[in-house]
Length: 280
Image 1 (cartoon, helix red, strand yellow):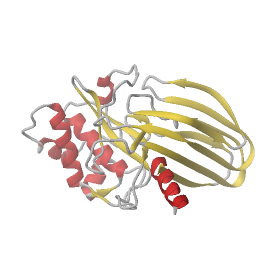
Image 2: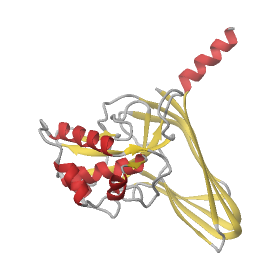
Image 3: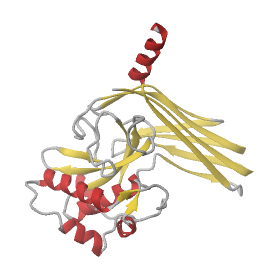
Image 4: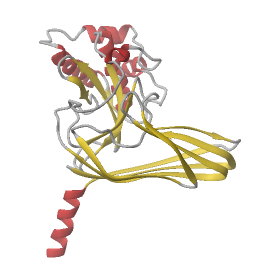
């Protein structure tokens, strides 16, 4: 699949800020399932700093804006060729040992409800089957409903509420995997959704669970599937905050307002529609 991606984040301040510094993990991961072309990251008024690949295999770019500034625009555009690898992360270079992802965080820490849900998953043939069953358990326990949770909502809170978004499904699945002794991590990226598809936003998140002999395998509990050619992987971490594509700080007394727009399009479909219109 050939996907065109446009992602724009606009920061506005009611008073000029003095400085603006960010660490961006907005470059598609390098592995067998995807390849980026003409990928561009632009920061209005920004100066690009050091770039490097971290131990998790994510590409990180540093950017800085020297004020005064009342608006900063971070714009990402490019094309990504993807193919379905059945969720298996093949050919991805990283140095962090999978066991490091057994560590809990504030948003993934287990409570009694999460432990009960994890323990309710029985009769798994192997750890891959167990991971699939855990993902299905989360999908059944937490209904997809935007606007009912916050960025800081924990997996335990989302499960108690029984509702949430992809971030909540992912935190809950990571918690369940770790309870059952499987390393789990949070993945941020993009998802192409067709017009008749689900209502998830194009910026998306899912979990990866480490399975012996296979390595990392993706599970999207929000959509009850494994990532396929519709998904573009950006970065990973212990939870949403750790895997955030954009981290930074603005120095000044201005109050920040944030606007985000993401568009993921199937280039081949658009080209076919254009040719059809030309011929007609």
